[in-house]
Image 1: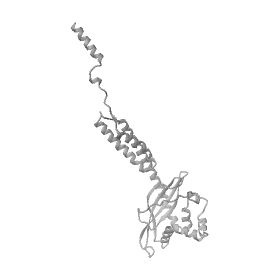
Image 2: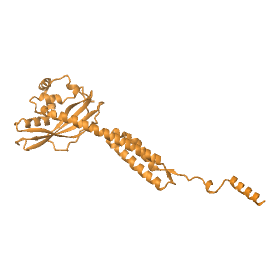
Image 3: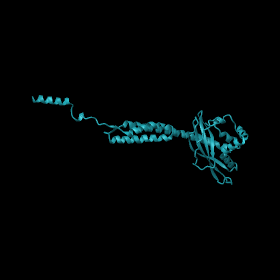
Length: 275
């Protein structure tokens, strides 16, 4: 009878539901806010392809994701979201590295192509005829059906006000040509491309800019008392049929190195007027 009674007791306990520990309600764990913030930064870091200023989002995605994982590891009973943190870290790395690589390659190509034109432009500056300078000052679409001789003819036949406007714009390059024309001892050499990038003008086309630095050396004179001077040519370019076409948009002479400040202005659409 005792054995039978004990068996009935065990069976009753098992029907009640087992040990008290097994019946405890699972502890609630909150999703880490750092993990969520890191995921958001990782998602929006895709805009790194649009501009380098968005790289900060990639960095934030990494930092927030790492901090979130540390918090989750320290408080596993209170926090969750390691998968979300990992996703944010992954997106930050992928978008940041890929966009950075693309930007680096594009910058290298732009510098290489701009350097080629900048070296060629030395012959334009030294050319006896002003027509070469006027021709290379035009957008590729504008100069396509014109010759340097036509440019000189248009300049010579321009009205007084139009001619003064041209000379005012061309003032720095005319002064540079004046120094080089003083003697054969005046030398000009291309030094480097100070900066390149996408021109943020109002044109519908993608334009690029490059700042070409030149060094001018030679015997000083009353008009040019410094033996060494620098000039900066602001180049603009477009990728037309997989070929970069450049033009000289502006010239600064004399120029102090690394002192160029871009001036926002309408971009010529290539048809003789700005949009």
